[in-house]
Image (spheres, rainbow, N blue to C red):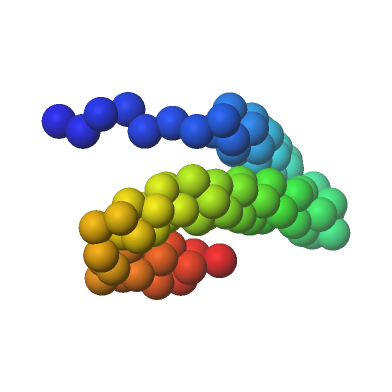
Length: 94
């Protein structure tokens, strides 16, 4: 079992995702109610923006903390290809 992996930004990420969840529920209701497509598209934009910002915050936090810590350890014990591979993997999500 893995240990809890949390950062200071995680509450902000959760807040953004909850906001996106609320917007998405609104979109579903709007479609079911037959609302105008322009209004629905505007709400979908809000969902997309909230999720994108949450993802950017999470990835940046990972780069700033997890990878910085791994690279610091690599300086002491020699270069780590695992750290480089992890960096390559996380940047795919930017």
